Image (cartoon, one colour):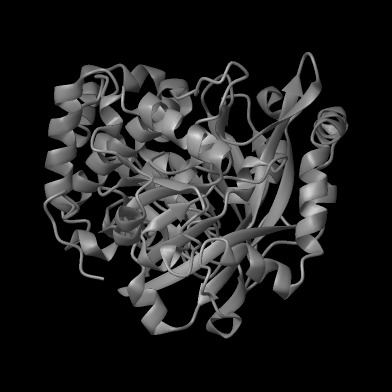
Length: 504
């Protein structure tokens, strides 16, 4: 889009028009309506990369079913802290979504969220024992109240008929079930928020615009060079705060910024693929997100799942993800993304992380070498009666695993999300992948603490935050009654309450 001047001076620049920038933009305008914001998106549409429903590796992450969030320790106990943190963060997100509906950002919750049960499913005696221990450990937290556990074939068949159909009844199996699980279309959520943001005074969206350079001035502001990828025109933007929320594209921009806090960070890109069911009769018979356990030696990203998603009002059924090696940081990125990201200050951390994660390299090599028959055999572990002609392989999005400096190992591979911010709070970048999108609201609260400290602690912002997120400042993980009431209130607002009947 054209603007009258070749240089603008917004208060805030958001790079990337996905779920992270959309969430931050909405929160900033709700907290301080007079802020001016410019959003730059390199593609011709909003939320078409990692936030898109077919690109995002997981939807509605709330730690109900993701077994990699609850590792078994050497002493046989189950570590639940990460699962509890994610479940609490998602309940914060549910409050934010409820606020968006109340304020008219969306006409109805079904435009982006649906009730879809979350199940963990395992087979084999050792895995069944693990799942039962996990279930008992999680029940100690109010965030997992209502979770069910079963080894009974008839009950499991009721929960997931397609998964149990054709299975050997002598096989030892078990599952946990959370009926209040959800499917969230983060692409639709992002587009809805940004469409409303565009209507607000002081907010401008620029699609087909790529940020090329960032340089900080002595007054802490940032000079940003942006190119219109359609016309070739270039412009300069000067902003007081910059957020790099461009998915895999955030790392190269962080490195270009030159902030000391970004030195030593690297990224390891991984591509993804789904098997997509094309038979409507089969799609209708399954209504759940069924997560399994990664094979021994496989990385957390390899956790397989049979996933019901609602995309543009239509049910879809996906299985995967299957991973592969790529040098692109974005689905529509460049093969030079990885080599160009290697700098003198992150070479050692990247080499050290690579040496310490040979299992990941082996896993990716095996994934790349998989034949269609190999992929189909993995599906048949979840759907014994599956037929190959009902499924088609489709490319998913890219994820960039964070590599950062470590005093002991030189470099470590991080499998979560991380905010890297300048010491003066003038720039922040969001790196990493899962469970990112589901915890975006909590991530932005952390960003405010780091980058907007004075305003964040002001009475005005604190009061407003409690209007947006009523439990702000309180622990949902420790207060059982508060957790239950929040679940009920948001469940009713989002049409995902336990009493609601789901029509598949």
